[in-house]
Length: 164
Image (cartoon, rainbow, N blue to C red; front, side):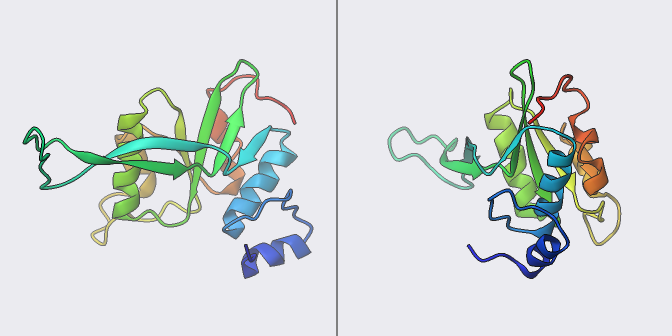
């Protein structure tokens, strides 16, 4: 995979890509910050299965309207705790309506996982400026933080993070 111009610029400044092909400069910065903090992580190594309901569908066998499709989601970062706890972190620059629906479906299909968001900036969710990304995350039951400097804070409830 070809590196973006921002990732290339960060690598020239001394950031390390740790052998990963980051999709954005923000992901590269987060990985650098996690590594500098001594936190053990992997990048795009875990896949979560989830169920996405289908609208206006009908099962041909039983006539049920409760149908959907099985989907897979590749998590950005996985952080491992000393006690076996696992945190999945999704880094987001832009949070679209399609993304929001997907993450709610992931949470509904996997209620026991700890999926958290690290937003590049806390942008407005709508044009009417009634809700921000962080407010959406809180409303839906996700922990979130904003900016690269907050990347360590997102691991707050996980005591005893594994040092790499």
